[in-house]
Length: 582
Ligand code: BGC
Image (cartoon, rainbow, N blue to C red; front, top):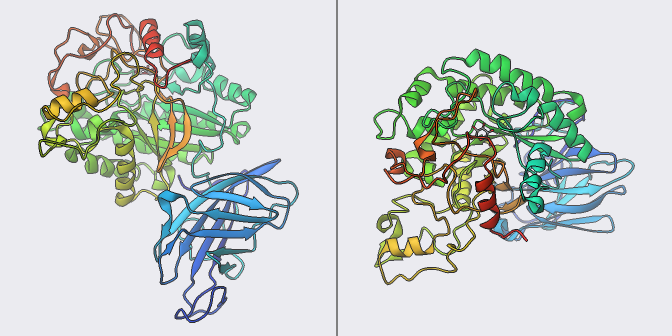
């Protein structure tokens, strides 16, 4: 997520370059300020990302320009005023008196020549909050370079006083909005213990903007935003989910807009949402927006000559309306300073194969440069939304072999996939996305609302490798699905990791995006006015299709239409929660 534009608060940034070492002959701290020929030894870009009455958050980017690689990098500075660091991320940030020391995290401890590290912190402050005038990197001073922004910083160095940086990770240090609609329903349904967990607000049709998403929900977007302010929340999570020709590879969540209704999508869905979000009374709320789940991945895997192709997905590829719609949503919301867009990337059991992986990153990049969008409108990606893939498989790994052969080849569950769980997939996808052109500070959200897989069938350790690769993997995996392609109301699933900020490198959060207890769809013919149809994948007796390699669906019986409350599933999710619900 990058910083970019917009008013309200003034972004303040200091680009500080370099006490330079000349040919390595001058000692640490030798300053060559203003000497055009001197190569800087380090550059520090310190940005105040957010300020409130009693404090602020800042991000610091340090670049090592010296000839030698630094191991265990360390950045130090002194505050001039009363600033006091309370919490750091991506570095250990401590303060003694006015002096602050940020030491490298173990997972990012070396800084090669030309490499940068970024970290951030929250601090309290009263009075003037000036930018520190001097920094050191491992003892070498990085001084203010001519005292102002200059062209050394290619993305945030303009002198645009209207520019305001987004924070790197909107989850960091943030109290998240507890969706009052879901919370009430969960509490009434036996889920008191988890009813105060934050879940996302789904905007799944035009009417949801005013009066709530599918099912029993009644609160519109403004109601939620106002409730978030009342809760004193710092961030609200929402999902925009209403593309023309929605859910092209399935029937359960087809929507209200026909394949060609892109203008209606823009004018009657995205624009009115943007108008509400840009109300200045919400300017201090970080709005985390998951953009159009499943859409772009479907254009990679379910089209053309593939066995998995569907006519609807071919149509959406041909008419360009998924790409146009996603681009338009990114561009429109990206203009609002406090919105953080995360584009859906499916999950490891979908995009984790070589045929799909890079192609998805490239398509997302294309969409992020369509309809006025740029990569600066993208905070990151959302993995496993409304799916069931384990965050981490604790008892086996993609590198395992059985009988001398990789499980990629030997296990039909893995079946040549590169990943066995969501976190390894998400981290690798993030890298791939950066390599195709996304900003280097993008992060990934993993939806952990229903991927806990506790309960009686959870393995307690790795299975023996004495048998076949299938026996080893099937006996070791916590994900108990019949097939990785199964996605509807999965029997045996439980609530997963509770929402957590920055749980792992490159992961902005474990978040509950799919509200647990809301159905994925029904196998029955239940009349509704939402465009939803019976879907075999939600019928426990269905024998499957090419997208789950003709396996049984693994779905719970008697489910309501997608988005509606499914009490039996909710109870099972509670029972099989992992970590368990006390
Ligand atoms: C449904 C939406 C619903 C969402 C969250 C989707 O499967 O199609 O209507 O808002 O799930 O429960």
